[in-house]
Image (cartoon, rainbow, N blue to C red; front, top):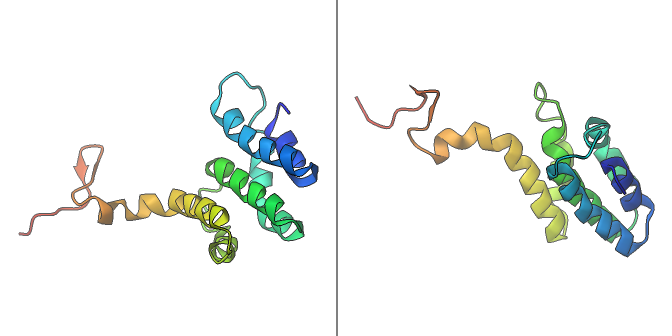
Length: 137
């Protein structure tokens, strides 16, 4: 398995051990340098994730799938519509499996983190400009 797409195929069609191994390999493929074409088709994989997830019948395969989507989610290239997967996230947040819930939290924090930084870090500054003032006038 040399590409992320091959890993997704192994997760969806392979045996339990091979699926788990492929899910863990995706993180290495995303963050290592020197792998050519590693980002191709990622946007489509992320965009189609809810439909593919609904077709998966085995719980262990669903877990591996959601973990992998959470690893590549930041590459979705949908900055204009950051909420395109929110309905799916709300479904996953209610899942009894804690690994699936935690992977969903990681994806949500990618989108909501920049929006809430001003509440979490009073006086947060960007590019030398004070966005949120903490002192009272």
